[in-house]
Image (tube, rainbow, N blue to C red; front, side, top):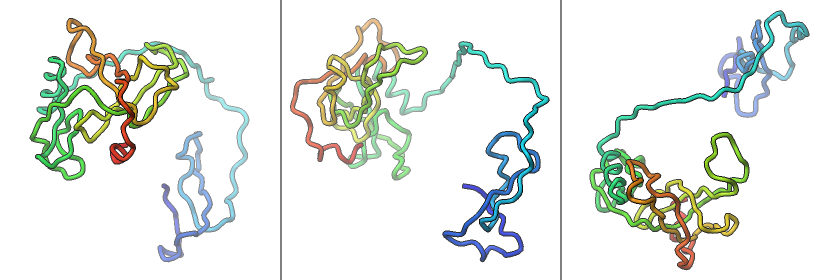
Amino acid sequence: MHAVDVGTAGPSAIHTGARVHAHWADQPVGAITDIACFALGETAEPVAAHKTEDARDPVTMIVTPIQLEIQHTASHEESAYLRAIAQGKLVGARTGKTGKVYFPPHGADPATGKPTSEFVELPDKGTVTTFAIVNIPFLGQRIKPPYVAAYVLLDGADIPFLHLVSDVDAHQVRMGMRVEAVWKPRERWGLGIDNIEYFRPTGEPDADYDTYKHHL
């Protein structure tokens, strides 16, 4: 997405398929903003010769740890969800008896804008809809690769959420796999979805694709 200068030709001169060329800023700085706009026509404009010498100080790079603290005020729906998690329960929300069940709950249904005023307790079992095998280590990683991050659609919910799948070889995880939550010891519970350490296979037959294809 960028601006096109049609010049004296006027707006009627531009159309789908029109060829354009870049019009460069007078003083480039080495960023995308060096393209001031585009202009009609294929003939490129002359560009000033690139200066090989730079009088500015050289760029110095350092690697340093950083810490970020975020304060978040939970909404009414989030508060209900977090209080339930602290009690070992999974609570979603919907707009009414026929509304979609969102987990974690939102303040409103994104599709209709209606408030999600009705809470629904959900089981800690579900279906893997999509997943990724993480093979590459990175700074701060708490789990040794390979491991699986998967979207789990809880039974009775309409929106999957991201969590870990373990107790199974990473390459055995698949779409439709039935899984259940493995909770941390009760004394380690807090106000967060990490009360669930991971999901593991239940051993049940895989869910049929038609049962979750609209929830990917």
